[in-house]
Length: 96
Image (cartoon, rainbow, N blue to C red; front, top):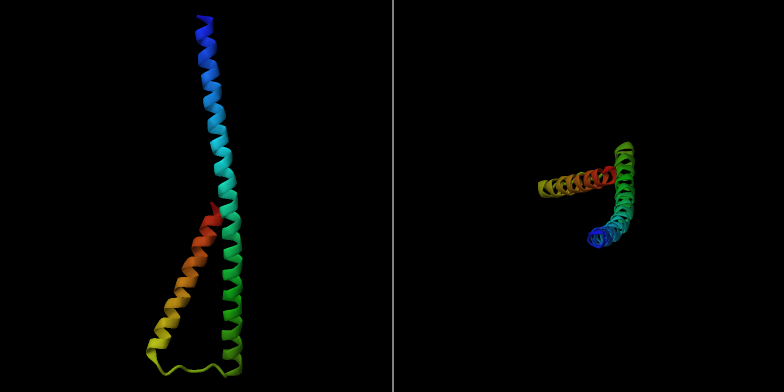
């Protein structure tokens, strides 16, 4: 009876050890992923800052080119929206 109980406890210890190892690996992977997201977010924020500075300097000097093509405006607006969404997603992931 005692031997059976000891074997069950040992089996549970082994199972817990395996679960712990799996969770440690998952934590390591998630930390690496988090670091990668931080780097991407930083790069995207730098791009946004650079573009904002370019737009602001163009507006302040009045030398901002006025694109005649409506397609250019649409493509530009769409790209800016994509970048903002990507930044928002990165921020959401960082906050988790």
